[in-house]
Image: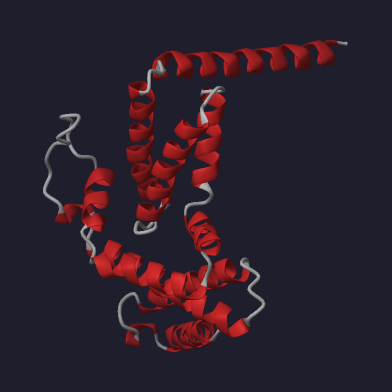
Length: 234
């Protein structure tokens, strides 16, 4: 846990210096120290959630995660959307949004960021534990999205489920190289589109399945509202 202790000390010293003489601080130093501390706390929390029962290993895992979080943040901050020329999305023909341009900028980061994280995690953890860390980063989007596909396609076959789960896991591993949930969601949308195209190529009428699913949700919502109104009027 030396990493987070160092961040705590650094933040305390910077905060004290700011109180004594704000003009003497480098621009953004306090914000940077606070961001470092937040990254370290998140990393420690995720490492602790694995219940490794080995403080030294837990600390090493936390350090690997924190290093990645900081690297992604620094690249993101140094490469705003304005660093990507305005243009069109070649798939839709629509102008690139600010989010599109930020995702493009972040996707140009050194491949070593990703490789160092995955190598560091796999050096210390089982594959199931690595997946648990990735799920923390992406707030459980893989199981949540998979559950959605199983609800939309009630007779999803085992082979179809395996293919779609593979796409979603690929999305999750790519998404850990992006800074916030908006960007992570963009990456997942790429693989959700691939999943839906796969189902269509497999003979599924995706549009009809999705409409049936949304219609059933609306019907249930209306039924629940009617039942609540009937109960209230008694």
